[in-house]
Image 1: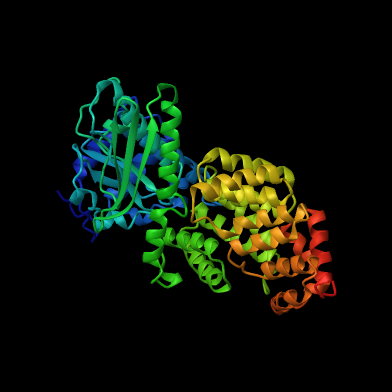
Image 2: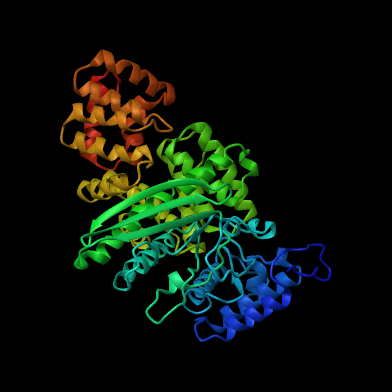
Length: 541
């Protein structure tokens, strides 16, 4: 079926008909399981009708604020985040409706994150084929701000009615954990079984299954154990990207804990900021110039920069993020990523940047205002607050970050790193241990916390060995620490190349060493040790 050409519009979009979309809209708005306020309902009707009328280009925050929420002509999204907040609530209300009631509706309406233009998808009512999973209409794919992941209900290879809850429970746990990662659009797909009162709404909901990536799995049980095998496929070319199997004792008392454990491992491997999906798409986007990246690709460039920081990567990342901010100024994560770069500019004393910490705080707060439920936004505000030595704000934002998604290796590890840089090593290293264990592709700068703990214990040989576990930072930090440790160990000749390298990057290091080190590290006793080591290495601090 095709959508007829709208009056006054030259566009022709493939998908459900206008009548089918309006029928679905009415079905949603009148259903008791669509939990939404009158304003949210007006919001949904407005964006759907504007899109069908060929005016989707007008669906900006200002238009919605003035036409739906009664704001005046002087509306400013930075000061009044009403539209982004209500959009987030509307998305959650739609997700709930399709999970608990509308799974088998003939049309699915949703609003992709980062935009206000709705997406209309013809519903699949049976388990999807690979061809169906790889099909995303061109008009819709342009609206996506992140990858789509279809979760197909796990298949029970030893059908036992008494064990069916294992399969349903694990499917439900996977969808729940995946939805915590806000960059990924998660699509629960229908199985070929009919829903019953005891069935999982996730496993039996219909949901649109046109997705770039597909997660499938099987469960096999015997009298003493059960084995879960999972695999991730790229529907674009049919290639299997990842597979893993998990075997656990069949202990009724641990079913829930085991389901959670398996789901956490699967989700961390495929959906985290440094998981299989992100790495696959980041590799595809490397060929594009920074200015040509879409919003999600710009965010991927940011995450890649955190793994392998360099001045060149920082510059390319900054260009990509600024273009994304100009294109979508109401998309909070972009401002949060820009805030993070300005935090690094402050820490490493980047030349030519006026008041980078003030700018970082401004952008970090803007990111939170635009996306208060974004874990990235909260994490970056915690980062800026720790640098500004605002301990109360740091503690509040750090706890919110962890609560939003305790299974994100990047966010959990970053909060652990910040705690360590403030001197709370017990809390910090516990979080870092967990993040590193579940994500082999974690940012290597996580290991700096372990270097500092060794210095606190006066284990300078151990600290020097720890420095080899991470890649160099953007600035002079690695050479400064290595020179200081070699100085403390009396290995002055070995320290000289590191002193020279640090001075080449920061010629005024001798005069400003304590000030510059304290920008990132807030533990005075460790700073004193580093200063003593630099003096011993021959740097006239």
